Image 1 (cartoon, rainbow, N blue to C red):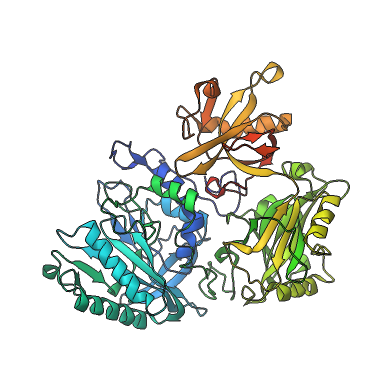
Image 2 (image 1 turned 45 degrees about the vertical axis):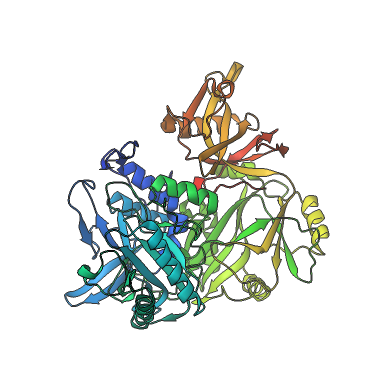
Length: 617
């Protein structure tokens, strides 16, 4: 089920999870529908920006890649109402396409065994019609006898030529046999103009590299050459989306690469598990390609929803960089309290409340205490960024009470930013102006906007300690809001050491805990898998232990998720689990070999996906 643990809102139930969609290859076992489902929900954070606002054509293999496939453009009648839709008019009539803009929508794609997702280079415009292209794509298709080194030579030539007109180029191995090169357009073009520009680049390279490049589609001219396909920039054409699986014998992916890799004779197409590991280590190598992922889509909407402006589904929260505020001044930075809760994006649209977690999961039903906000702000359409907190008797945010919200005395949303108001995106507005607007907007309502901290960085940090807050976030007064990006314009400084962790196993306790969990074995994802960082055996309540045991029971596995494998003494008596649950620990220090000392449990982090977990220091 996706989202995990949800009971209401958009849900996707995985059926036939053990169905084999890819056969065993490369000495690796078969890839099942459950594996595909897990990949798409795990990769969602980095894949969605490259799909946002674009109609998605799906290529489905319901019986696996060994059996026939088919393309699907128009949404079937049984498609869920919550999918975002866009309409295209073809010669044969109008067709309604899905717009894949949430992890839940990607889960639906996986449930359909739609292994491949194809999108155009344009997005829908504010009027719901096909809009402008915001990126170019070049499909480098190697003919017979073309080596990987030659393919790389052509790719670097494209990069140099396109760079001469001021554009950056991002390479992607297609998952088939070629390369895709993407270039973001600082000034969007009509698809026709984009295709013309790409065609000129291809023709120029055909003239300067005639023995290696052809810009002509005639197959007889491709032997020994690279076909530089520019035509996929046309309005009617689509390209396999970055991070999409391919319907090949192996479960390969259209995978972003570094330029250092391009031209390496040993360069190969990557499997989905390799891509997940790379993303865990490097993040999105295409981060600069679709960094404006907040397209306006007025009539590109959910069924019976035709509101205009920025929508919550197209926005991911901006993230702060860990650092010190000790030398920062109030002249350049605003200082906010860092509170002990869960990050939340809130959309109120004429009395309707929608809440999204940091990883774009709809959590509206989990916080009924926040429904009064919809009434208080019913006359507006607004998107707010902030923190949902559980307050103790002293009015201080208490993380442990967030774990047991039903008994918490007070649950509140504390807003610290405003991203859209009444159909107008505010993402490009400077923080100083957004903050002033937020305070004005909240005046006379029940919306809580915590006051900024006085003084420079050291004074702000001292004030946060006095209030027993988690720390301080410093924000440049002139910074814009960068959705989904971790920016140095925002710096977080914490009063104690905390670390998000992925649970990879547990060990039984002693005495009263002998039949249950005594300690959790935790790790942080890296390129090799899950890197072990230590055990956590304190800080649990009995209710915590019971909940953890219930969550981990269905995840038991005979294989260790840790890489490298645990030493034999450390592995003795361990029950391993699939690395799917995220928690948070507090610790004294981290050793030089990356182990946590004096770690204690703080609680589960249902607002985090394992792929989001990274080392805090």
